[in-house]
Length: 105
Image (cartoon, rainbow, N blue to C red; front, side, top):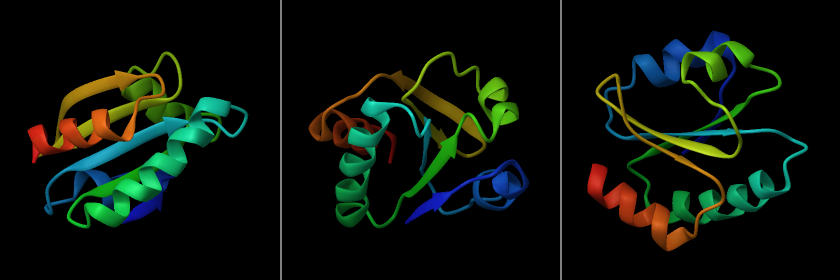
């Protein structure tokens, strides 16, 4: 499931998530690599229905970007059990991201 997260929905979809792995996708609408990553994540969403993918626009949600220490976009944050497992910055391949998902499930 892919959800757009705003600061006010953060607790509902991220902090209170008891379903397992959440992939936080920090990006911006003016970021070309972010748009390419969105297409990859949409494909991943189809093949991994047990994870939640949360898209966070850093321009609209600077508080969350600061909270997670996001310095550049795109950045993926793997989140589980209310903890950051791993951060990955830059456009990555589908295979690379799926390998990380498998590691963290």
